[in-house]
Amino acid sequence: ELEDPDSEENPRKKRRSGDVAVVVEHYNARPDVGVEQRQESPIIGLKSFNNWVKSVLITRFAHPVLAASSGQRRGRMRGRVLDMGCGKGGDLTKWAKANVAEYIGLDIAAVSVDQARQRHAGSRGARFTAEFFALDCYTHVLSDALPPHLLSTPFDVVSLQFCMHYAFESEAKARTMLRNVATWLRPSGVFIGTIPDAQQLMDHLDAVPKDAKELSWGNSVYKIRFEDRENRPMFGHRYWFYLQDAVDDVPEYVVHWDNFVRMASEYGLELVYKKEFHQIFEEHAEHPEFAPLLERMRVVDSNGESHMDEDQWEAANVYVGFAFE
Ligand code: SAM
Image (cartoon, rainbow, N blue to C red):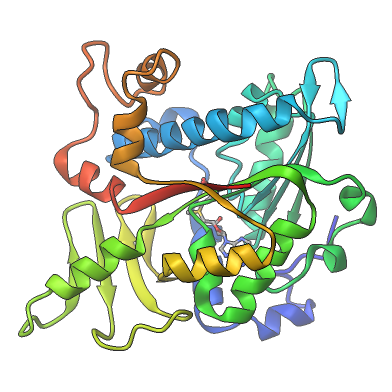
């Protein structure tokens, strides 16, 4: 176990200030409500859809790489996954279905990390080995923070779901994130993720009327607010994000896409897939494997009717999914 990054004795805690502190406090404070209560969420349709998109990405891009892994093997279970920004372990079941042999979950929010660890320990289907650490993955390089044996075999898959945008606060953080992704990823391994779509954010920002009191838009489900219309830096391009029953006005950063792809290539990462969420839906909604999954994951009901209202659908479309090799 690593030192507790939230302990008052931890010198790093004192240096953690500003936006990062807001993000950590926000995620630590959100309770893990459990499977049943999760179904009561007013945006359960959207949450289910986001989970379906992640399942599609994991199945399409991670399953083949894990199946071809020559690394860690136990029975038919293969491969190693690094989940950076793992949160409360919301993807553990997806990785169990991927037959992964070994999983490492990292997150800056120590309370979430504990909940993820408990979730793995308590789940009947958790046949794979999992280790969890509280770590700021955008400030610290993994080799300084993790026990060396965890890095002696490369990862087959690195996953950053709904969290990579926090790294774009500064170039140094984005580069540390990419270094952590790429250094221990095996050749032909994949890096998958989900982030807000910069193009859409910029288009919306351009569309805010000149005389508007606030540089914001959204609906009953989400709200995005910028502080500046003209200044659009490649790093530290901040906005405030609110998502009903999920994110309470937290600072996030635009991931300017071409800049990100260019930088990723410096770390040997080559883009193989990028789609907006609604495109991912259209591409897979009739698919023999992913169509039934829409119903099983309660994105649609047995008549094929969506559980998402229009506002939730619009909020879902803020995001893009990607895969690099
Ligand atoms: N990946 C999970 C999922 O898809 O359910 C959680 C997503 S949640 C929206 C974003 C997560 O990013 C939070 O758990 C937060 O603590 C984590 N995060 C933000 N900054 C981080 C950092 N510097 N290092 C590690 N995790 C970070």
